[in-house]
Length: 363
Ligand code: SF4
Image (cartoon, rainbow, N blue to C red):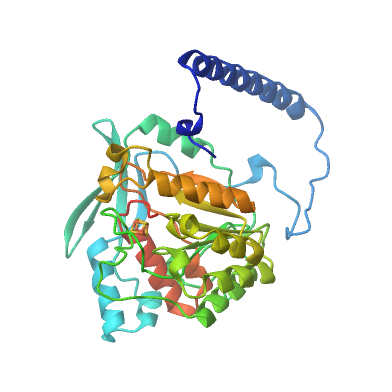
């Protein structure tokens, strides 16, 4: 998906015509969909389809369930400070990974409420006090997004490799996107990096054997319509075995293999782009906040627009697709799937870590 900035040479008039056209197409599609639904609901129900990957026939929309949505509502959450404490305790050996499975440290209830034109999450930890996070600056938009929830159909299979990790156990799903962090190193040092790449004083890089184990577990996910692998970090292309990891993901049969990248490596080295394509890489999510210094100022690093352009050109020339990825203006939380691929309590540990950090989007 390319942003408007790439529609070079467009005049204001042609932009307006384009907007009008897309509004007409959108309105027509809406009318056609509603007409189709009106007819469809009057027809007798046929036999439900059962795709090969599914454990049973596909459920109708009215048969699917959903978690409580809307606001105000109560939800399960974590104290961000307890999470850091328990993480440090596990790393230092003061506590075991199993305690994360069995003792549920840091778990607290949270209230999601609309306040002053925003949707916020409020929670109080008995030890660390109150925390308030902004979830949405446009309540109507959040409401709309929640209303599009597809509904839950198939229960996740009882598979101890991927589905047993305590409170955060995955109960429903058909597979989705698995983010695999290959390194916490990066060749940039952006202020809003949720990984604090290059700023934590140590390097964390799973070995190739660790990565293979994660991919092997992920591929066993059931029911599995498809699983997409997103290599991330840090800057994943700095991993010494980036290409091997891509090739292995392809070998074991993932649907799509992507990377979340700042693009520097791809801009610098066309041969590397060719090798990535050959290894099986389908696409990249390219960090891209805009074309000007101003749009990049929040990162505290210079505008790398020429680097992004070169990366796009190199990647396009070898047939790797590029999606432009912009940092959100409010804190966001990224749900990562990696925890369900790890053994035992490690899954809960990582899930805890993933949910509890108020994070701007990386790369
Ligand atoms: S935000 Fe992305 S590009 Fe910036 S330092 Fe972090 S990992 Fe590197």
